[in-house]
Each structure stands twice: as structure tokens, then as C-alpha cells.
Length: 357
Image (cartoon, rainbow, N blue to C red; front, side, top):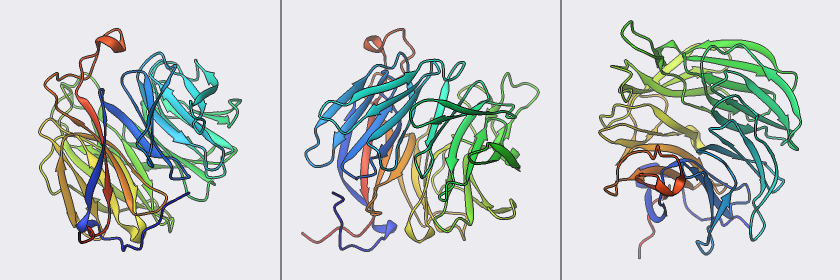
């Protein structure tokens, strides 16, 4: 059951008293639709499920490589995850020991980076380095392949009504697809989030995160601009807010804190406030914008972050980032047991004034 609070949303008073620690870096995190669980995935080939009632932690094992993203079915007790060997896995997360229901080990060629589930739960969308968006039934039957991207697919998002799917790529293009047919409706130009200079060995940047407000008027696209090189990919973090009806740019948002990496996670909150988390060698921040001004109304300094997710009660925000532990590195070794990695941390921020003790 979702616990509710007699509190008023006020992001300027955000505070945290809960932290979930993981011995490896976290790539994504999300609350279950029932509000009972928090699940995260990371670079040790596993997912972790925490019970928010008693903090019990259970591991979901079976992926053969880094687990890059996860998404919940809206009402069935299913969880979908994708890995860097191109696999798509489906779990029953509600059992005392979560079980694997089915898997597609070759859902993509190369990295499968993103997964999203339609609001009605009938479609699962995946995308990755093969530049193709694939649609699946909730039982793993391939429904369609959506082609046209010319770069890695970094972000996927169904609109709140479930009629359309948005996919963002490495070259700064967002494509909108009609569901369930998979017909391309339009392309949105986010070239400001992409850099390819003559001395670069690769495309840098891309549309790393997407969010749509509850009124379905705005599409926020996160990434970075003005990339300086392709070594560690430094650049200026940026969110571009688009008018969803016209496809025109409406506003550009930047963090208050100096940073040199992309905005990896975006989430609209009640009242139209946008939360975002970025990364960078010099650190990053959790930022809250009101959309009508470039700089955030509130920000919280922290290490590089990767994802944000709003609890179903609308008053708690999960924020994943890393915490330096002296080991350093992102764990590029042959087995998870020998990974060298910073710790993954998920902070739960209460988005209201802290009650007096």
C-alpha cells in the first residue's frame, strides 16, 4: 500500500534521511508502481530490490553483463531489464525471491541501453547501439522494428497517454513514433546536444534523458553541449525544453553548479517542476527548475548522478549517484568479482519541509 503524507510539495526544502548503498555503480533506479519497492541495476550484472518498509535487500541475478536500464509494468508485477550483451529480461519482482519469467538474449546486437513500458502495459520498447527501436509484447513477442536512427539510442519514453513513443539518439535527434503501428510521425532537432569536431574520433553527447509533463505540453531533453573532446567527454550540461505540440524549442535550462558532463536523468514533478541529475569529473548536482527561468530554484551538490525517479506518492524522489570509496574506476574487468568500482548510492529525498522534531 502507498503511504501518503499530509505534506505540501516544496523542493526548496528537500531533505533526505534514507540512503541505500551498493558496492558497485548504479546505472538506473525506479520505484515499483505499488510504492513498496525500490529497484536498481548496475555494472555487476545484477539488479537489487529493496523493500521500503524494512530495507530488506534481494539480488536478481542472471544477466551476463552490465545491466543498463529497467522499467516496471504499470499493473502486472513484472519488471523488465536490458544489458550490454543485448539482452531483455522479464522478472516477477513481487515474490519473496524474485523469479525470471523469460529472456531474449539477442534482443539487440551489441548494447541494449534503454527499456520503457507503455502506460497500458501492452508494449515494451528497447533501444541500443544497433540504432533500432524494437517493440515487444509484455510476454516477449517481437511486435515491430522502428528504423531510422543514425546513432546509438540513448533514451526512450512513452507519452503519458501511451499513444506515442519518443526515442533520442547519440546525434541529437528525437523521433516520435505512432503506437502501436510504429509509424514515424516527426523528428525533433536537438543538434545542440551533439558534437562532432574534425579531431574527434567519435560522436559525443546525444539525447541522454527525456521527460514529459503531466499536461503533455512540454518535452524536456537532457544532455550536454560544447563538448571539448572525446576523452571522458567533457562538455556543458544542458536541458532543452520543447513545445510538444509545435516541436519548437521553448527554453534552455542549465545547472547552478559548475559541471562538465551530461544530464542523465529527468523527471517532471507535480506542479510542473522539473528535476534533473547530471554527471562530471568535477561533480554534479540535483537541480530543480520551474521551466520559466534558466537556472534552478534549488540545487543539491553531489557526485556524478545517473537517474531520478518519483515515488507514486509524489513526494519522494530517488536519486542514484556514485560515492568515492578509494577504488576508483568504472569496473571494466572480465568478471563482476574483480570489478574495481566506486560505490553506488541511492538517496531518497523528501520533497517537503522537514517536520519539526
